[in-house]
Amino acid sequence: MDIEREILETDILIVGAGPAGLATAYKLATTIAADDSLEMPEVIVMEKASYVGGHALSGAVMDPRGLAELIPDYKEKGAPIEAEVSGDSFYYLTRGGSFKFPFMPPPVQNHGNEIISLNKLSGWLAEQVEAAGIDIFAGLAGYDLIVEDGAVTGVQTVDMGRDKDGSPRSNFEPGSVIRAKVTILCEGVRGSLTRMAFEKIPELIADSVPQAYLTGVKEVWEVPAGRIKAGEVIHTIGWPQPSHEYGGAWIYGMSDTMVSIGLAVGLNSPDPTNDPHMKFQRYKTHPLVKKILDGGTLLHYGAKAIPDNGYYSMPKLTYPGLMLCGDSAGMLNPARLKGVHLAIKGGIMAAETLVDCIRAGDFSGQRLAAYQERFDKSWAREELYNNRNFHAGFDGGLFAGLFHGAVQMVTSGNGLFERREHKPDHTYVLKIDEYRNRFGHDPEKQTVKFDNKYLFDKVTDVYKSGTMHEEHQPSHLQIADYDICNNRCTEEYGNPCQHFCPASVYNMVDDENREGKQKLELTPSNCVHCKTCDIADPYNIIRWVTPQGGEGPNYTNM
Image 1 (tube, rainbow, N blue to C red):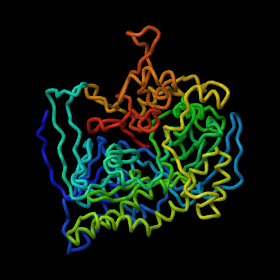
Image 2 (cartoon, helix red, strand yellow):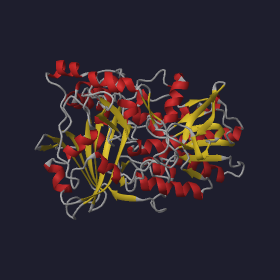
Image 3 (cartoon, helix red, strand yellow):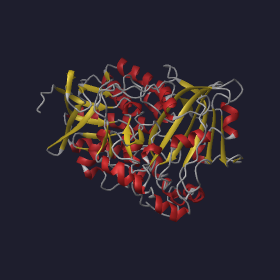
Image 4 (spheres, rainbow, N blue to C red):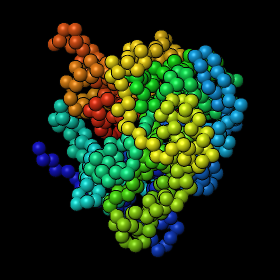
């Protein structure tokens, strides 16, 4: 049915109040305030979480370069820095042992970096933005990207108050249409509007290698004093990841009694039982880890996909009416597994371009293209380009990757090849019979016994994420064909979704209409918005869309 929607007009629409979006807003506001010849445009910053930082989950070691450029006196202004990095170590793990590298490879050296809670930093940045005169609308989620006559013209927000079948309830409120001269997508990794942009405007990624992703699973613990020092940074590779798969782990001392710990698992695994959450729980059984956490208390949990293929997977940054920034633009250095500083730098350059547009009274695609030119001349591009082949070097496994990484360090990122092609992650998973032929046995997931005191099942961990969704709404996890899930996928892959989801959203249950058969059952209310399912499903038939605004995880100290 036709629905009458409120139309809001603005000059600039920023989608996502993470580091990139907030940096854009802050730089724009402060630059205009310092120039009496300029008038502040209408700006809307929309954030799908119920509060700024509610969906902010990231590795917690930040290169301060971007923030120092945006706000040189950020420390004096009270930015929530948990600790300055006080020490680095790097380990290769086996099942029960460990080897400490005698030196720190340059990409994982963290001298001068800072341990942060991205959740708290985002909240603080939001305060600076609002103090500069720009309002942020939390709980406002984008549903559709509007592209008309060769330009992006705005966003439609999510309808509120629909029933599970999509029919309006008594409290139904139709989403609005926000029309803008420029829409800036800063909505994080695999954002739903960004995915739409790539589908509706394929030239954005026509020259890009498909993105590669990891799923990072993370917990924050309170531990007895003496287990770790504030500012201590530990990185590990090896166990529990097989040597032919990609990934690594971290342990950060946020204080003398607070620990951030996580494991990042590549989603290009051939194993249809690849389970980042289970691997992370196994990781905690390692003696190196257990001596830090044992006797402590789990405080928080979260999970998030990470765009990890670097420079060659970045899209074009502009299109008429559109700019891309932060994780939406793949601004993450895979060698360092860091992107906050790059997202902030991207926001600075986007704002500088917008200021030029305001001065000229011209928001055309040609004017916006100056953002790409700025990036191409920036230290952000130089950093990403010098690590452009890092992820691709691991295509042959861990030890091949370490070798390629060493060669790339002395060849300014080139290594032994240039721009190795990468297929979409979901194409790497093997069918059960293919896995058997390659590895000599059926896929068999290694498990642990959950006690929900030290090793936690997915549902218990989800509770620690603060995740909340209103039950009576359409599922924000759209499956194109359940028949594939309940029949073909069961036979060919064993339903990988029940393994790779770190929040127990996808489960196979007995089918009451088919004796001896199972069917897929969804629990969307568990979803922590990590986007793993949107990436790793072997048939590419799962689509993540935004639920009602304000819903999802409610992260703190993450």
